[in-house]
Length: 410
Ligand code: PMP
Image (cartoon, rainbow, N blue to C red; front, side):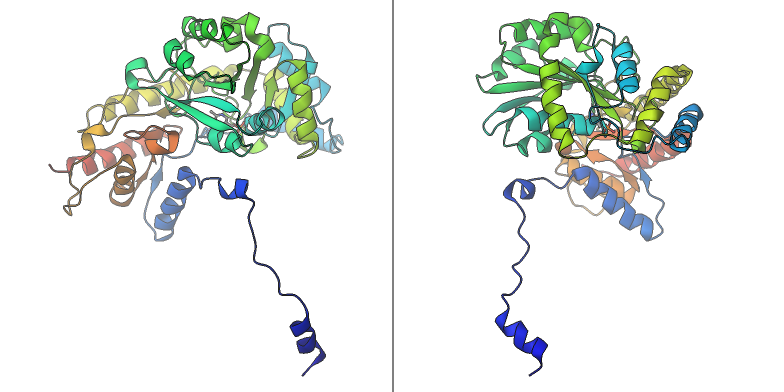
């Protein structure tokens, strides 16, 4: 027996890997599942069109890239302040209006980290968060990770996928900490008018313990006048966290730069969380975001117009297809049609489409078009199509979807 073998017998064996319970509870994103299935088909040489992901297909504006390069060359390469550089926080406060002070601004690695910081800084096990469905897939996982309970309130096409004051009132309990409002919304594209926000604020005034997250990341992709929650209810600013960033407006998803604006006490608690996780956003991305906010803004309107004409094209095409009904969204770059009319129909092989996920799997395998089923957003019977893709790809994808739906039988 060698010395090494002898040691093997006396040493304790390595224990199997064990995941924390809260990490094991995180769901594998449906969007990731679809993307992986699409990638597997692409690897077989199949020309899959993916309309699944939520990022603009435009490039980051050149003046933003120049500013980043200049910052790197000028030595802005050391740790920035955890809360964000004073110059960027000042620019963020200025563009938001409402006399916000830079101390009320936190810069993070994307709007996503703003949300995660907020939940970690405020939620204890048993706390409740009101989440109108359909919702962006990540919210629930982020706050259930903190032990909080999600209180899903379904909306429908009849109410324009908007939360009504009555439904909000019914969902509030003494454990409610946050109401999550996302306008314009992912995945529905629905947008609240100032009057609709004011009506929700009337309910919230009766429940002073409920705070609001206003996720306004799609603010600049709006085809009707955009209203921010704080403009509709300035008196509730002392319990509102505005979430925004450069990802969608300035086509900067990879720069990972977002911000939160809220009461100084909340921001301070979020800075403490961020200080012990990422230490803050990249100094280069902060310089880039400063250029995005303070430099030329004309690309915002041009790109919004381009998204609007794609929306019109996609909505009218989907509404001619058997089994689909597509409302006209007022913002973001998604449509969220009902596919209820396809449920119960048969594929060419005789098998039945039973769910929205079945339909998306069928369209992926037969039409080679990747879409995300509504169940991922808490509202089955629909699917999400992102139209942040070229008109050529959209035209081809819609023709394929149409052919595949025509092939379904009763
Ligand atoms: N909120 C919503 C509604 C989103 O759709 C996204 C991105 N998909 C985010 C927040 C996160 O954006 P960021 O890239 O700034 O992290």
